[in-house]
Image (cartoon, rainbow, N blue to C red; front, top):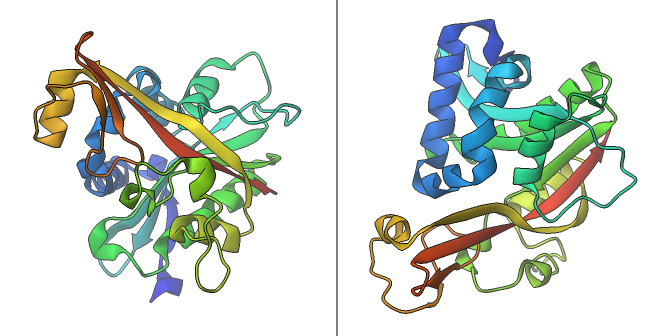
Length: 249
């Protein structure tokens, strides 16, 4: 039963850390190219190790292992300026570099639920866990560069247009954005360059399992936007659009 599930910090034991890390890897394995943003490969692992008590998991005592995980970090954000277009990369870089300022905000990085455990309300449970953590640490709120779950089906639609779509009930079209709104979040606008991956063309050919012989924009499986291929420079640039969602605590 969902009410019997327990929120635990990965810091509680090496076994729990390892299990939660496996959950994260399983949930995101098909989108491994996102690990190649500069912020990710320079700071992400160190941040998780630096703030282990901010890395949460949803433990099923009956099964004996986690069924969902959430990653977040404390950072400094005064709210006087709009949240930037860099999104996820900005959260990571800011959290890694702002030791000279009080950390007054929680920055969400990921909520991971493997496919076998989806559609059971676990992701929303983790949103509430992050909000509870922010309150317990006396932070001002939560900022989340949310990855809209259905955007991958519409990679060539601008994110500014996508977030205006509604369903037949007049609700926000995207299911994951709807989940955040139902938990009390507010849409603060798109972050068009939330995760930026600049890599040589062979890198993108490996992920897409196709050749790129001409410059242009190409969809890749799971991508929320196309990859811009430049044959002359032999590079491909992917700028993932996310949506800023904010919560007060």
